[in-house]
Amino acid sequence: MKPGNLGATALEKEALEGLKVADFCWAGAGPLMTKYLAVHGATVIHIESATRPDVCRAMAPYKDNIPGLNRSGYFAYYNPNKYGMLLNLNHPRAGEVARKIVSWADIVAESYSAGTMKRWGLAYQNLVRIKPDIIMISTCNQGQTGPRATQGGFGTQLTSLSGFVHLTGWPDRAPALPYGAYTDAIAPRFGAAALIAALLYRRRTGKGQYLDLSQYEAALQFLAPAVLDLTVNGREASRAGNHSPCAAPHGVYPCSGDDRWIAIAVFSDEKWKALCRLMGNPAWSKEPGFSTLSGRKDNEDELDRRMGEWTVQHSAEELMGLMQAAGVAAGVVKNSKDMYEDPQLEHRRHFRELDHPEIGKHNYEELPFRLSKTPGRIGMPAPCLGEHTECVCRELLGITDQEFVDLLNSGALD
Image (cartoon, rainbow, N blue to C red; front, side, top):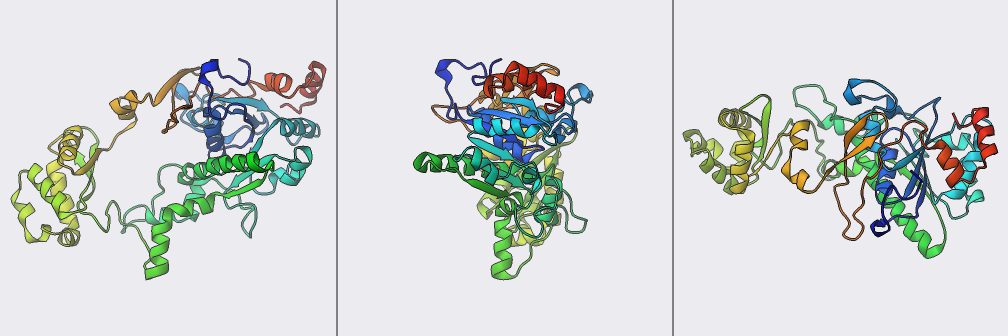
């Protein structure tokens, strides 16, 4: 497949069609950021090396539980619509290829530890000499400056450093890590928005710019209420399990079936009365300790026990329907199988099946938002390791056949 169209017709032009992105990112946060650009039509070259492949290629789950650099579900999720190119940036001749990539690109994105691109001669100051209006974004754990800028790590460590782990879990137990590298799901949104702003700025002024995105600082935005409470009231937030200071019941309760649960949140006495009517107004619900929110908070452990005794007699789907119809906030705790069978997601065509050269047919998640005129689409599976190296070199970078052979034989394209 030739670069640039992803199989789209002339009538399917996307918002960022024509935008060229050199994606030096790896792991999660950076590739997810550039994925947003790729899904909306940008031509994105994902650059890695066989000597040090993108770490997500070595992360389970693997298709059919068979390990392999081209079989990771994580890598597939982060990198659809991208072209895969090999370039060993530690090789003496890599610089000449990198300069061609920069000359071609509108955006250079990287997510290595602070200082890594500079050691390769690819700092922003070097790039603007090649292309004065280039936009560059660096996204790493703690930004490019400061006493801990060069401290490496992944989102799992950063989730702890930024305070989420301290707040996750039960008050009488050790902290619990939220599922996955939570900060990797936050920073890419900030990065994508910043890049769009930089593109608009360049359109108005003709000038590029350098964006330094600290994933640490981006994550703190999601802890603003806790930070504000400490600053203003001197209260330090701590673990509270599934409880909320302004709702009761507020938790996840067992239902009939194997490992089936429902989440319920009641924020007012009016909603509590509606829930009691659904439960048939049991005698215990009329006890003074449960009649007000403050009373329910004071007796929350007993309330949770009583709620669980009732919910376990019903299916999660049944309860969700009844509660939502009565205006009570409730939702089934879904597993992966439930998600694939969800009628709402099916209606919105959230999952798209693509055929990958090695792992075959599998599903990708479309973006959760659709633009009205240019909705964005996933049309090409994530690349195999180095799958498009020759295509990119010859068709996008203008490297001659002989130059390509020389570079290949030298090891620069490993």
